[in-house]
Image (cartoon, rainbow, N blue to C red):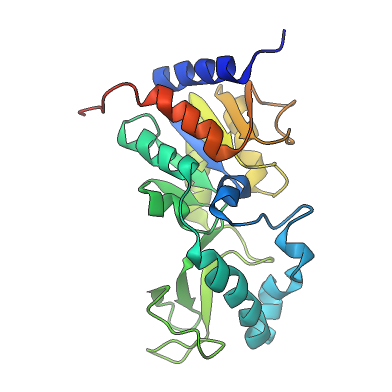
Length: 256
């Protein structure tokens, strides 16, 4: 028997209310309703831009060319995006003690902009720039991008967005935090991730192996849906999370 979406949302809400440790695992799909297109797929950014420009070797050898693309994608365009309902509901869940942490593959800073505080950024954050010489970190807005590539005000070293380029390793801190959360979670909430990007796509199956119930929100089936997902809530992230939030937030805030 195929359950209705509303029935599945009620079941998901019940599980989330009783969970002692809940992790949200988010991908590009959660930010689509904020106006940020995914990188892959029919309308993905890699159909417009050459992904080679975001390879670390290309960046180091041709920083000006790489920065032209970086500026267009991440600052002229992404910088104008605002959190949508899905980001806001996740922040509200954390505030109410219903969400322990977020593991995100996104670099758009929208979780923090919505008010989430425990965010493990698997691929870094485009709103930070780091000097490759002195390693000083700047917040986007402190550095002018009128002249490319931007240089460090302290030492004139090349500045790089503090996210993971192709060919770079995942930072150890978010990697360790993700494995830790996967081992602790009673409920693991996948939102907007298709499961195509390694090594991030290994985290949800690990949570499943450790006994977590998997709730997935995606507009279409993903690599996870028929493999590890227990409850599949098919739809746009903002719409489904909005309905879920209406149910979850009918209870008062936790005081602890």
